Image (cartoon, rainbow, N blue to C red; front, side, top):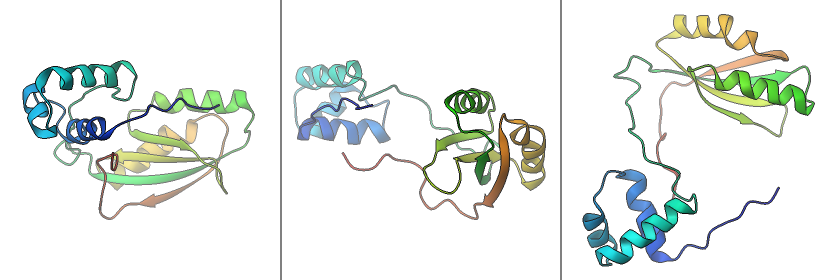
Length: 157
């Protein structure tokens, strides 16, 4: 499946860099920052939204202040990797709020999950009561993060 990619010029990239870190910035301030007037900035911003380059805006919550500072990465090996099994697994993963990210991997295991919990005891409960009940699980391996060096940001535009 080939994805359509949008051609971005330098002003589009500047817009993306600013809104990626400051989603609530006013169009007037955004225009000043990127060196365009308000009207073309607003037009570009709307186009980027309509094209799906900007998928939305949301509040970034601090997981530590919310009591979810324990991060574990979990390798998942499935017993069945047919499309129906992958779909069932994907659907079940989306229903577990402690799973922050889930990626299908090409490698020695099938999925890599990023799981947040309050502490190791809470993680053990999530593993036992939620992760291990996911469909088609053959095995799991857990890696506990000691420190987040970089979590936010999507890179350079």
